[in-house]
Length: 205
Image 1: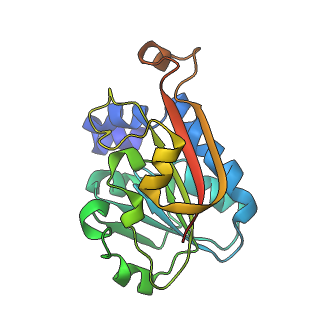
Image 2: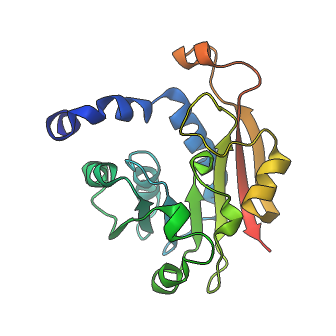
């Protein structure tokens, strides 16, 4: 926090948002169900990596040799990610919607073919079925929600079936739908039973 307060004081509120109960709970829910499919030496694309303070440190503690590649268009968040992770060899400042979707990811796939692709912020992006792979066949681990009160959530899904169509995942390894926020936390003031988070792990055809 001291690094953020010193270098980017205007990011303190955003970083606080990245540390709400629901952020940690949903990411660990995905990780706990993804772990059986991970192994040493894997390359993982982390789409919408943001600050990288939750998923990468967890994986580094459990694997001696794992290659995590950060992908995010937010320059300041990418710079701050070094505070929490100095292991990652590559960080790409890319707009996923415009720089990787619709067949534009071939160069990155050839350069760093992924074994796994993680995206816990699909609600911020266009449909992940447009992330087309030609070289590899990675395991996809995605999350979205239907909390439309957040202006940045431009692509929400109400149901798991809708999410499956958006992601293009047909070979499902794991799926679940959980409450978006827990009642005992402040976020419950903006939450009721209709708000959920969808977790989906599987493969494209």
